[in-house]
Length: 250
Ligand SMILES: C[S@@+](CC[C@H](N)C(=O)[O-])C[C@H]1O[C@@H](n2cnc3c(N)ncnc32)[C@H](O)[C@@H]1O
Image (cartoon, rainbow, N blue to C red; front, side, top):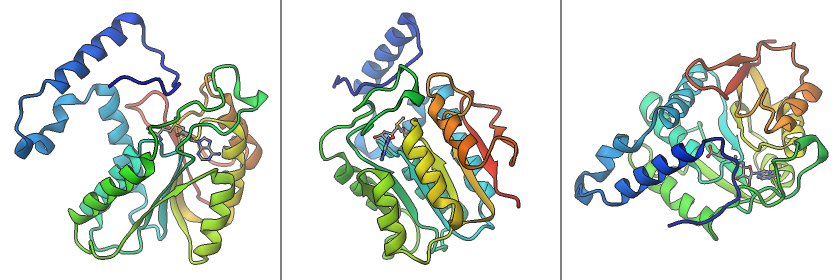
């Protein structure tokens, strides 16, 4: 399948070519269905594996912190799925560790002049009705761990600057242990960061996908305006070039 969802990539032509050959190899995979899920590591690259390792690292930071895990800008949902798997590994009986993914599932609703020239309205869209597919994936994931009769995930479709308020109104019990920001652009990052401030506790972790990245300057601008850049140490994960995190320690 090939479709253009308007994403920004930095690979040169030979990398793109190699990756498409790799995808083709994956589609020709002769492994039987009964063994396919056990062998997905065959198709990871150092880059994709390092992102998985980062999600594992983030999750480990919040095991003793009360609260839920949210991702702003979950798109195809790999991270929310990973967080569900990690909950199954590290705290299978923590029924309060809900995983919540926010996305328009239609790409960027708008971009501003603070986002540079690479971000475009509608960028990073997904296939139609994708949120329903993601719900199904998360339902399966949840069944792989104990307490599967308690639904512990939520996929929230729509502009997060609006749906976050609705979510927090519906769930006044919310404490956020981990928030992962991958909205890429200024306005929703600024608004969602501002809105979650009062829901964080000491030890809460905020992960960021694009700080210090000139392709998406809006994320850094938003953090600068909401928390400042020197209030918390902005740490990077050594095995991945782009990702970083702060720990709320005051
Ligand atoms: C780079 S993609 C996220 C990638 C995903 N986290 C991953 O790891 O594969 C950025 C996402 O942010 C979403 N997004 C941007 N602005 C948004 C907003 N105001 N409300 C909800 N989602 C938004 C886009 O729809 C897009 O799916």
